[in-house]
Length: 441
Image (cartoon, rainbow, N blue to C red; front, side, top):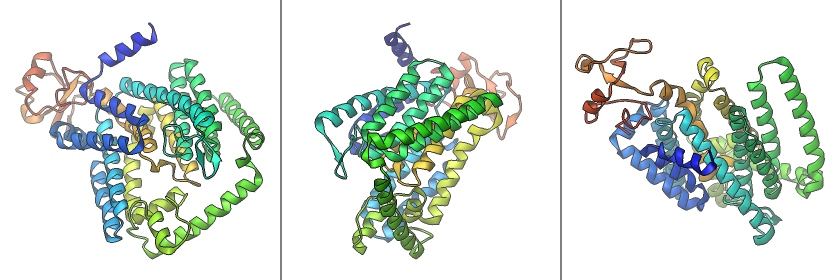
């Protein structure tokens, strides 16, 4: 089957919600503010739609996500941080989009989305070459491509996620095209000249391979190969870019250390609630220090923006999403998905030591789509089945399936086509992606 035939086959199988998420994902290639508007409109639509909202409410962490809203907005209101108020609202909307995507995500659709993101990475690489050698975009006075992203560091973080996805898809499909895509993005990393991304990708890929290895011999080979590759990169990069010289690295660390000290001082003055999103820029203007968008450290920036309270809620929400992906049953069935999540977490934490790469709407959206895979097992288990209220179980001529036990006031039951049609206008709950048995979507 040709690539075009495969694309046609995939698009024909998409449901309405899958089409929405697919089109929003394709919007990553648009300018940042235009893409932010698209994400906001899609999320608001999902929240307003009763059936879609009910699907979001079924996801773990929904009520924690609701509590994040005041934690993100109130500090900005108290601090008179107008820009932070807008950013806080967008930040929360992206969190809610995670729940919307989770509510309909299946293994098949996740494969489609990940392949689409990798296709976008190819477009980004092509535009990166055009930008670097023809347009000539500079970042802090240095020739560095930004491609389709806000700045070179955002593109560097996006490349980390592209590389992780490519490795994960290769582990699943064993198709060499994913290795080609991996090295294509590494080549693009040279163009954007993002230093932290090299370490983030190296550690993330090694962790992914170790996670999926089934023997001590494979683990040893993977670890040894990772050490050799990292050593080769460390020796080669200073010759490729002056940004990797000892002097440049020392200067960068000194500048960041000053930012961190200043951030800790501000956090100490308001540790519980913070100052609202984008607070570093606001406080820098007020205090007459060097004005930057963020604190160049993810944990410090979170504490500065939303305080201990908001950061705790955000970590609690992330934990609720990630936890199912590392349960034994999930890992046994969707091991490559768990490895992608592990690599994403590792890369984000490493990059987050020196930057806040997830701050952009485009980069955070790619992160969100990976996180949305947490509900795959639940959705796949429910494929072709419906959650019918217990008081209607006798009315619908059905037979219990699976464990056959009640879950709260609901029973998991097999639905015939006629029964499904009768319930299309009724109170039907299903996690299926089948167009006949999933009318609420």
